[in-house]
Structures are given as C-alpha cells and as structure tokens.
Image (cartoon, rainbow, N blue to C red; front, top):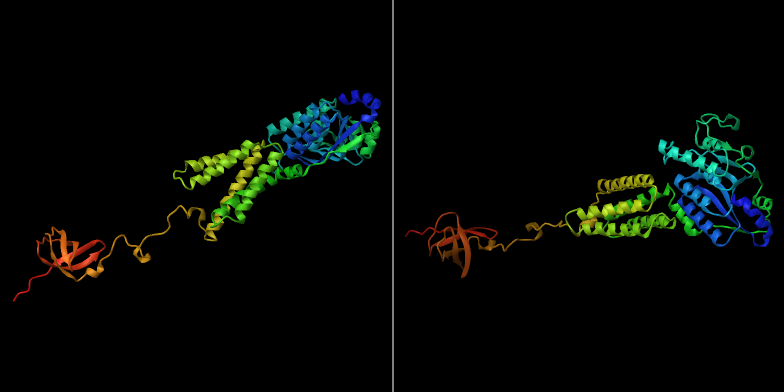
Length: 428
C-alpha cells in the first residue's frame, strides 16, 4: 500500500513532513463531498505526506459517500481513517476506503443499512448496490468482506460480535482490532501521529469555509423541500397582493439560496440557473400573451432547472411535490378564507363594465326631444328625416308609412332610435 511504502521516506525527510487533517463530521452529503474534494486536492498540490480523516458522523447520503470513496481511493497520498467517536452508516464506508483505520476508546464503526427518505429500508436495487460497495471497500484493503456486509445486512448472523440475525454489525475498537478492521486504538490524534513518527510534522487541520458550511446546510435532504416550499408559497402569495413585498422577496430569496447551495456544492452549474431565469421570464410573458403555450414552456423550464441542479432525482421529485402541494394549499387559503383574487391579472384583465349607471353611454341620448313636434322632410318608410326646432333628426315611425310634409310628434327615445307618430289633423 502507498502508506507502507512511504514510511521510510518520511523517516529520512522528517523536516519536510506535512499532515493534512480533514474533519468528517455531521451528516454525509454533497456539501461534505465538496469540502473533502477541496481538501484532498490542496493536500496533493502542497505535497503533503499524509492525510488523516478525523471521522465522527452518523452517516448520510449513499451517493455522496460513494463519491467520497472514489476520491479517497484515487489519491496517491496515504490516508488514515481516525474514528474519533462514530463512523456509522456512510461513515463506516468512508473509513473502509482509507488505507488504514484507527479508533479511539469508546468509539464505534458500522450499522450501515441503506434507508430511504422516510427512514424505511431502501428498495432491493439500492440495497444490492450498497452491499456491493461495502464489500468492495473492505476487499480493496485486504479486509474480510463478511464484516462489511454484516454492517449493512441484517440477515448475516454474527452472534459472537453481538450481531445475530436481525441485527446490524457495529464494531467496538476491540472487536475491530480482532477482525482486522482496525490497525489499532489510540487515545487522540497526537498519539496517532507519534505512532508513525509525525509528532514534529506540520499539521494543517482543514476548516470548512463559510460558503461550504452554508452549502452543506442548504443541500441537506430536509432543507431542500423547505426551501422549495417557501419559494413557491411566497411567489403564490405575491400573486394575490397588489404590490411586490415581503412574500415575494422571501420566495425569490429561498430559491436563490437553493441554487447557491447546490452551486457551491458542485451539483448545479450556471446552465441550471440560466434555465430557471428563462423559465421565470416565459411565465411572466404568458401574462401578456394569450394561448398558454409560453406559460407551459416556462413551467417546464423551471422544473427542469431544479432537476439539473441535483443528482438525486428522487429527492428532488419528492421535494417538488411537497412544494407544489403547499403552494396550491396557500392559493386555496387566500381565496377561500381571505377572499383574495389574483392581483397580478388585474392589469391585463378588464374588470370594469361600461353601463349607464356608471355614467357611460354608447351614444348621445336625446330624451329631451320626447313630446316635441316636427314635420317630415322626407317620406318615412318607416325611417327618414324630420325637422324639429330647425334641427334635422333621423327618426322612425311606429311601423306605418308617412309621406313628406306630414306633422309628427316624437313619442319616445331609445338610445339612437327616435320614434315618431303622425299628428292627426284637427277638424273645424
């Protein structure tokens, strides 16, 4: 192994020894992967002599652990897994990918069953993959794979190690040493370094940058659906308010945090953010263009951008379903209990009616003419022209024909329709 071959070299060139300590803490997820990738890359560029993984984790995402394992096995630098309390689940897998493993008194390693987002046993395909990964991690460093499999499979019976059928294997330091899953037990990091002659080495403990801490939080499987729910609910509420305000700001802020976290974690690229922006613009454009096609394309672009920003499509699908359900519920509450209507559409939908009660008329109403008398200028068949008070007016009869120079009286006015009736001649 690279670690054993390099030990004589370190003893000769002690003054140049550099040890990189990489904390592997809290939940294993893509934010941690980004941090470990950066740390190992820096150690390689700076010519470090040894990498120590300071492990204390309850486990986490299988995909992130798998990528971390690939990074550990691809580096030419020797790697020691220092189990400083717990290396459970995905943490056990990470430890098995190191060249050597050391544990502290009272620590534990194992219990690596793969589960889904609801905490239930994962499907057969996922379990098969994980068992294969655990077995390969053990075999690559000459360890008996049955113990790695027992950490992930309850059906393997190892009663002598407290893992009878139906229980997952979790090794104590003593048990790990007995089954050769540990090279030794040390009290602390200093004792570990002294054991290999690195007590005078320059030790650099890598620290998670603020951006990486934020990314680890924002890409957590629990936080992702929360961010998407806040984003969708905030934008839905904003549609029911006359001006852009707090709800819209919170919605946009939550979605920006989602993309920021996934960008820093190395999951999202600028193309996903650009596609999201294009989708938003298309949805806005749909408010001013009839048809619906542009809006559908916009929604499709937005949903696609979320899937482009992750490699866990199941988590993203579940998160989007949760967010959409909450958004629909919010819209229902706004309409049902608060009587709100979509304010965003008020500027493009005509809500006002033009009626007489509101002071609107389609044409000039000449009701003042009712009762006045005039004389026909043209025959009325039944429409024609009469002269009333030196004003020529277009009129109609009640249905009968009237000739020219006949006296008439205006009986009623209905908008532009003026109805006249002949005045009978008075007898002497």
